[in-house]
Amino acid sequence: MYDGLKGFRDFYPGEQSARREVTDAIEGAASRYGFREIATPALERTEMYTDKSGEEIVEELYAFEDKGGRGVSLTPELTPTVARMVVAKGQELSKPIKWVSTRPFWRYEQVQQGRFREFYQTNIDVFGSSAPEADAEVLAVAADALTDLGLTADDFEFRVSHRDILGGLVRALADDPDAVDTEAAIRAVDKRAKVDDGEYVGLLSDAGLDRATAREFDDLISGVETVDDLDAVAAAGDESVEDAVENLRNVLAAADDFGAGEFCEVSLTTARGLDYYTGVVFECFDSTGEVSRSVFGGGRYDDLIESFGGQPTPAVGVAPGHATLKLLCQRAGVWPEEELTTDYYVLSVGDTRGEAAALARDLRALGDDVVVEQDVSDRSFGAQLGYADSINADTVVVVGERDLENGEYTVKDMASGDETTVPVEEFPPAPGDGRGLPAYEDYE
Image (cartoon, rainbow, N blue to C red; front, side, top):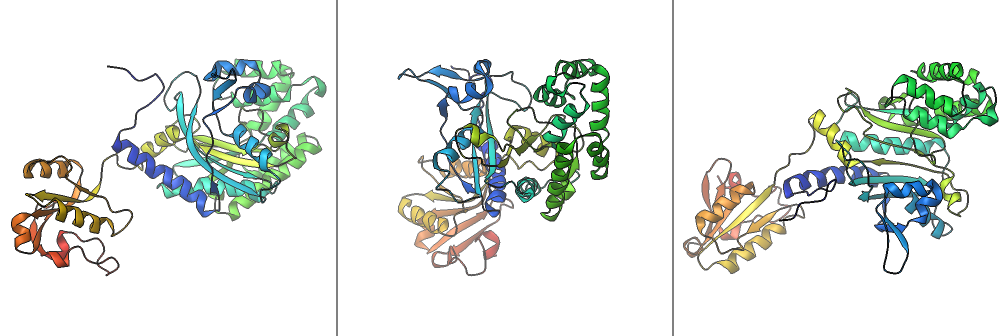
């Protein structure tokens, strides 16, 4: 008996059917906005990550040397991969490039609630547009995906921020702007809710702010609750802060036009910890606070394509993580039922395999989403009926030798237990006859 690896999960049919429903909802929302599906490799060269994040990143990767002596890693995220893809064919691709992809990723990190070593995300990205409408569309797709799952504005919120506001404020408030590490300061803001106050101020001090200035900085960003509160922030900063405030206002206005405004709130204490983010960033949170951590996030990464050797290409994206999204859906009571569903079970009695198989084919022809099973284990009548019940079959159609001699099938409604006989030539009805899927009640 072998145990599974820590941080890696098995998904049995019931849970997987629920996961598939959620994935379809996210991808369906993206598809309606014109995002096109891509597929990407599980392995990339390790240098793609170390060149951007330093050698210490290897400790968080599933990194190894392949048989050709190449340093490779299981992909921990999609953004570097899609950046590489855009660089490779950027001149051939129509702009904006709008891609969507659902797949697993791997990180060697501490396993906890909603965080695993193998995890699944749907990445939704726009390349080639710096307009606020691109940011707004990403927010709208994410909002549509969540509302398609049954969530409402009472269940989730997008906390929207701007990294250039944070970086510009740090420089404007510092005694010596050149001595400030703005990225370290932004990373400190990202950790604000995860560490105690003393450690947070210490992180800002390490970034180059004295403790009094760190307090002033935090008072400014934590005091912003509405768009109007951004006036004070703009007044405290320089021209770069004013420009960033204007950009944030424009994105929020566009998000309102795109139908996502009701889910958005200004939150300058939201920062996103990855250094490649450049402008507007946002995180999705449970509005009730029961799911205490960020459900997922996204934002702008306008410099990444150029850093991979491509032409300057603005980009913005979002990546719903499926594990944390499940926590939100479960809390809100909208996680799909984790049970098998079957429309028909064709039960064969006696030497009727050919007739039963033909009927099963006819039933499947009613539609791509019609689920039909038949016996493949040469079981008894009772065993087949028990199996039909275990897979939640709505209707059992009995194809027996005696029934066929009479030119009929026996149709059993599994919910009520009622049975009726149906002439063979009338079952199933032809697709499109207006009666929908044939079931017991169609023949009462």
